[in-house]
Image (tube, rainbow, N blue to C red; front, side, top):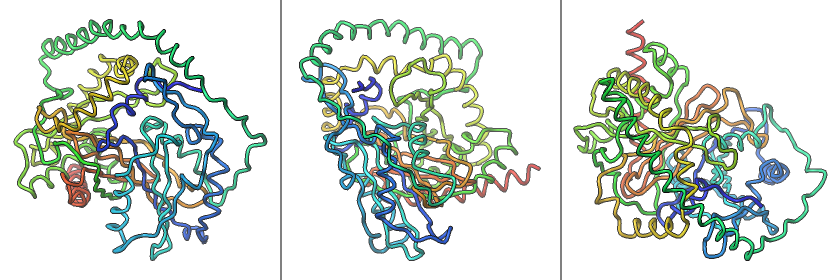
Length: 467
């Protein structure tokens, strides 16, 4: 038995019927790259043999009575692999659009909280004999780094690797005693008052940020939340999703990075900003001021907290969608990010985790449901326009359960008030962009993905002229 941390549990509390807080990944597998044929039964059996490497995939939630404390993880004594792994055919019209539609449909379905919080869908029926795998994990059990680590247990460096099942089957775990859990929750209640001790620290951090900017006269750095302009995707959302994806050459991104002396993440943000500018211009909805993205930052290496899955902080970044010149946009983003790094260090790696551990379950869940049902996201100032996440991936060929991975598209959750998320992952010399949106707000999300190669081409041309 293991208790969820406040930050992990918060993804459960903030989930509603429309704000689904799981993450998805679309893997395109190419068995023909190694002269092999795909066999679904063998594929599923190999997954079953590796589950002991990933405890999170066989654990389910057990709630504390009256939500007096965060839930605990327990081994699922009735685990059923057939429930978690599904098999479907590629729907008409097939191709990229058909695959995007089935991925969006799966992304728009909630996970069953009475079972381990993951699913895997195998999509067959491609004309070129490729296979797609759509995986879905609740954010309570993965973040960017842990999700990548989980994937590594299911991948190899060569095709056709077969694992042996564990020598010993773990003993069945006894169900937790609800009376004990409730008593422990009550005993911890006085500790929840520690949130009041966080307030002076928070005020001190904010004061320090203001003094830093005033003292240096620096205007670069993190954008301020609640200052973002409203766009068509900054409203309350439904459960329906739309998805698009596109692959780019990582060498092109690195050439741009080197030419302008910036970082890969700066280029990623500039590309997303350029694609959004193109999309909003197409719809005559481009704001005069810059869009603001929430950018998750992994703190796995710097956090003092050992427990838990999610170890993440965030920065708010201007995408400079108000600048028409792609090079000016890139340089402005890079300058902001240099200042944002210093400000993020001042806030501290554990700020979100420190606050989240005091999260009262009932209060959070009631507030999330009220916020969702009243559609409040459409009425208050916009916190941020979207989430943009850049996740490091493997820089060498990978074989997922024995089959060659040709592309890997990640999709994070979307939120009320920020109905669009862009997630990017590097994969064996490629940079794979995944876009997921609230369907009613961004029904033509493929136009954002279509703009990505054009923006990269503009920056690449400018990089060539600079040499």
